[in-house]
Image (cartoon, rainbow, N blue to C red; front, side):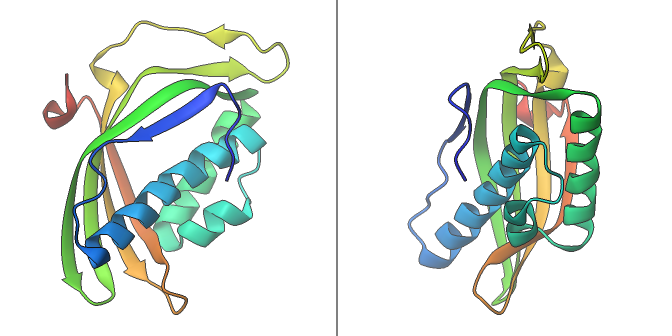
Length: 156
């Protein structure tokens, strides 16, 4: 997945030195990037999104992407993902929560390329809580995804 030059994502402390946990974190990050990629491509049905997400997470992400695309927007700017917390439940399921700093990320009009830069608020910081399940190909797919804007854990 290649994002446009004006869109960047940084994943801070997403390696913990344990092969299983690092694989889970890598795929959790890719699932997040797949959402961004789908928005920038204007495609809620993107193969990338379907590869890294399934079930309720996929349905919710597709709705989110469709809402943004239908409104005539894409993304511009940078998002920083940090403070990952991982729990391995068993050989095929895990949970990952993490924070996102969206204070430097903005909507961009697809037709005019005008960027809607707004001042950061507490809502610019988001706590994500996910469940991942390892599929038959060894990919840790996000199956559940919840987000909470302005969560105290993520405020900076």
